[in-house]
Length: 107
Length: 114
Image 1 (cartoon, one colour):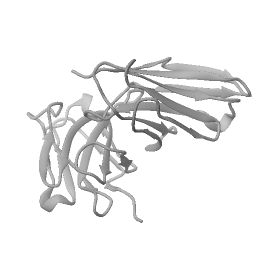
Image 2: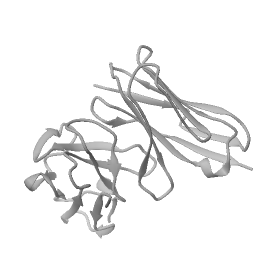
Image 3: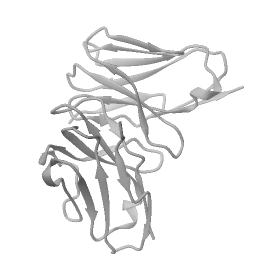
């Protein structure tokens, strides 16, 4: 059974700092997705990573995919309060989600 | 373009009662998913449809949950009888292609079972 593991599960960081969220998965997959969820809201697509070595950037967020290592990263640069949310990765095989990383950015 | 529509947004029932949730995906999207999201957890896939056929329902508790997608468009998820542990947000999502892909989510239906 496919397992998707994210770490950390909780992340509190200060504004202006950098950090990386990790998403590991247990079986071969050529695609991976990142989603954002604000409290009380639904999920919003952030990135679609379609192949090994794919890198996507949007504002202060950058996502990458290493299919050989079965690892995706979501890098946050110079965090701002607006990035506070829960971030989920999902693997293409069967669209199963990780547990999420709850990010809080403090002034 | 209209997004994924879900109703009702909120529902409170007592245990052993029944409830139904409705989802209308984005027009033309072939694949439809129902997820259960318990507070503080990631979405758990309940069932995946491609057009009006079931692709994956391995995590659907079939003794109490049922889902259908008539004519390959709208879908209904039913719970009967409900248990306390069914309290969650039920998310519907659709994707344009046949099979897994980027998901577009509805606002969700929040169920509270008392």
